[in-house]
Image (tube, rainbow, N blue to C red; front, top):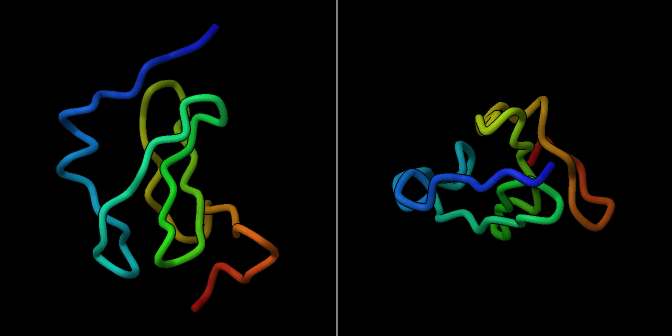
Length: 64
């Protein structure tokens, strides 16, 4: 079942590390921080904005 993330909320959320805007990957159900190289999961419609829960992009480490 595909869920849609609240676009209005997306406009307010920022990466907890870089404080930059996030982009929504609907297929993966993640919020992407290109600046930090991290993907934050969305579980049951809720963004999990914890660095320790983020998935590193392109083999980078989550702690930068």
